[in-house]
Amino acid sequence: MQAKPFLKWAGGKSQLINDIKDALPKEFTSQKFTYVEPFVGSGAILFWILENFPNVERAVINDINADLTNTYKVIADNPEKLLAILEKFQKLYYTFENDAEGRKVYYMEQRSLFNSRSTNIETQAALFIFLNRTCFNGLFRVNKSNGFNVPMGSYINPTICDTENIMAVSKVLQRVEILTGDYKETLQHAEHPALFYFDPPYKPLSKTSSFNSYAKDEFGDNEQIQLRDFCKMLNEQGHYWLLSNSDVKGKDMTDTFFDDIYQEFNINRVWARRNINANADKRGKLTELLITNYDKKNYIPVLELNKTLFTNFDKPYWVFMEKFPIENIKFDTNKLSFHNDISEAAVETIATNFDLLGWIPITLDKEHILLDGQHRLAAAKKLGLKYIDVVIQDTELLTSEQHEKKTLKKRKSSILKEL
Image 1 (cartoon, rainbow, N blue to C red):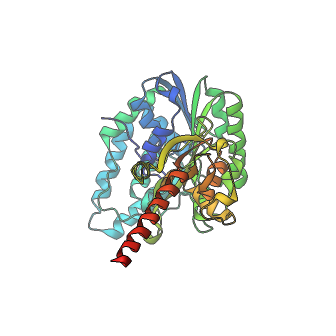
Image 2 (image 1 turned 45 degrees about the vertical axis):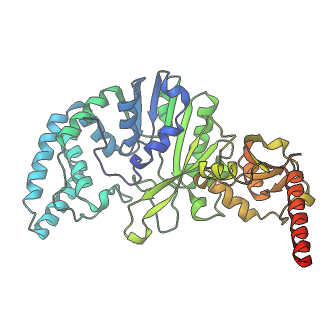
């Protein structure tokens, strides 16, 4: 069995694995690397990396949440004792299947015992897993006193003791060094070349939504900027890094926080799904950010559908051309099909959704003068692209053909009048 996350976790990255796979540096599949995850959480990416990339001989994980990292260490060092305790918890919890009040009392007793932090490390780890599997939505939230305060969930018989997966996790963790504390300390344990994956507490999309209280100290804008500075240092030292975060600009076009602080790096927007919200109407698809310090994009092709459309449309007057150099495009307002003042809001919208929605190729004449697509061209420049897909229109041939059609129409009209 392949190891998988043993916890439910707000912001878990299982759903982004394919996007993260596409975003990995090409060298990652052929060279030996140290993999470093400074905000490990449930470890979805960690386990996927260790199971699918044998060239990663060593990994380093860290989290400021000592209860979380203690659980990782116990699973790595003494899984059998942990499983024995979890089995007892599960059997007793199941006895309250038809006694909601009794089950709630038992849950609260276990929560109080966990918050007392008076047990041995194996029992504390078992309590951590028990609460995670039985609390509301699998959330981990603590108050200023570091007390876990999530209420009980409504699961009937949740899996508390997953023996097979715990043993699989224990096996892969033998290749992992487990740290507890400030994410910056991971640099001391990273050997060149290293790939860092950052999944920090996300910047909230609104004042009422917050996913940054996994520990008693919150992770605000200042901490996000400090993380950016750390990423810059890694870049200067020659390490690779990939970072995910919320797309605040996707929620509010005026909020350019991440676009500003990471402007020198490669920012990609990918679709994700938020499932943890008390209000079901606020769950659903939205964009998240994947930011890297490698493979800066200089070209994004149009969707295949649009390519097919323009390849087959009105030949020989249109010729589709891939990867045309943007610097070779000329601009003459008199040649534009529709000349309007550039709308910055429209440019922002196109740029924000550029790699999600694809786009329609812009149109040039044979002299490479822009005929249509000034906003798309402006968005491409804003993204720092060097190439763009275009359609070259033979305006002379098209005009000649149109003239012939008009002449023929007049002749037919004249003949009909004579008849």
